[in-house]
Image (cartoon, rainbow, N blue to C red; front, side, top):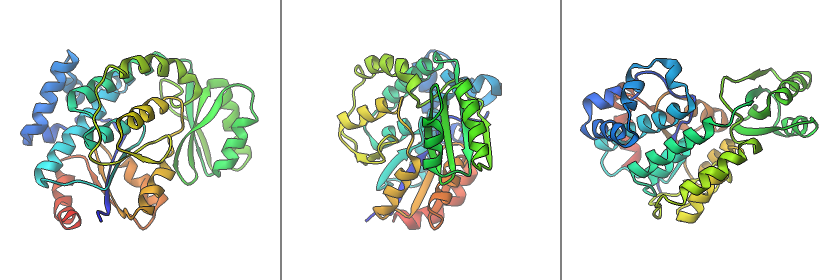
Length: 311
């Protein structure tokens, strides 16, 4: 049985220059960047490689940019290790789209168009926000949100004691105060453009539902573990519905990692910029092996060990 999974980062992992190593060194990756510029109708490669950082942080730019950099990294990994196929794929929030692409359920162009549309639609939802609560149990955070007036909801269960809430800004501020009073180590607003994964995203979900119906999915070659349920699917309807549900449902990342670990996965290969996901996994499953493969240097250093794991 395969004991490794591919995992992919989401919004927040972006950085100027991500993926440039692969553009230079790997023809398949370079072709992805060139095709993305053509598909999107503007040079997203220029924005990724040269910034400025503030432009790259815009939701409508960030989402296709992180997807593209992660997909280019995956292409480079497959070039080094032909035939590599994990037991499961999963991604955090936006990263779930890269996971679906990696599963074979979407081709590159369809996945990129889907992510670009998601970013444009989500960028329209303004007026809310998000905050990180550090050092409180899940049920306590749920209780705090439930007892407050207004919309504020737990939306990212990232690791034990690290939960993100989202909703109306005034309600978030009150929730942060209540969390600190309840013993949270930290409760701080996040620099994001909207209340992602909360019920306030329902208008975005409705708009996206119309678009996703025009996109052709195929059965996945590798099970995709969905954010909203922490359960796997290879069936097109289930994968598509999970991507829709994600708009207004929490990211159950702790449960997703525990599910994969319960099925025998002890090695997680993070593919894409940064190492945020590897850090979360280490806190969820301290005994797990993690590899962060986001540039040429990290790929080269990991190849020998990964070759032993996957073969």
